[in-house]
Image 1: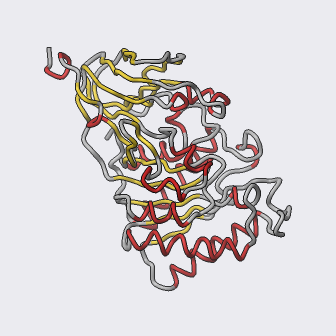
Image 2: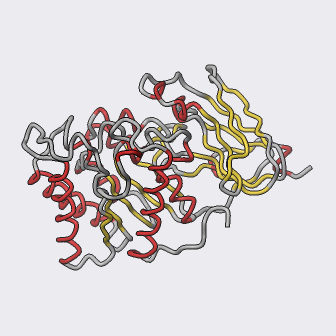
Image 3: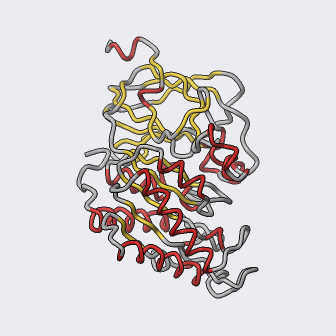
Length: 334
């Protein structure tokens, strides 16, 4: 029996997608800086979206974990209640359960080889230990900041949000910093990104600036310019891709409380990014979001379905390769 099968190991070396720790819990914003964040951002940051185990195992293995109660918002997302194990990009097993309070053990039937295990993020599980596997090699970290679309909202499983798909395709350790109902380009978030180690960066926000916290086009342009300046203070030469807002039919030509349409906000964001590129930031690229998916890919007029997430992932991966020379051909399962 291999040594890793016989004994429980700490889950830490297996964990990927980790930004910060709050005690034994993975969180997606700096707890030491939480007071400067909007309440909605910190609430979503406490959900371990994108946190996963990457491992190599010869056969079945076990995971010990402690889960919390299912959040009200996440109860709407069936995919957020799923344990999902992937091998060579294909699902090997999926377990949907209602975790009870206290520590539990999940047994994963595994055919052997490297894989990824996504936990049911809606229950905010704390992953405690692994038995029967060893950690997979670590990969360069990709920090992805954005809103609910970036968080993976409406994808049918944790592995199918566009950051997860693109990260596996590129062989990157995706750190998902998407915050449902938030991500308005706050300076505190930019400074946290600046202080977080990462080899690649992507910013994909703006849809929530049409409503909720309405922005004018002028405010959007200044916000994007300031956000980029703050991020660049910590990542002066890191490849950085900005994805402008995806289409939202109801908002494209409808003025918000400050008179801005989503089309106008998108144009203001793109203009701010192009201005910085023109000023000499040759490690910055723009991916216009308006044409990445069509209305038929939106499940609720805002969030993409699985096919829409796949289209965005493909476009982002292609832009990172072609515009910023992020190495290709080193996907997770290669």
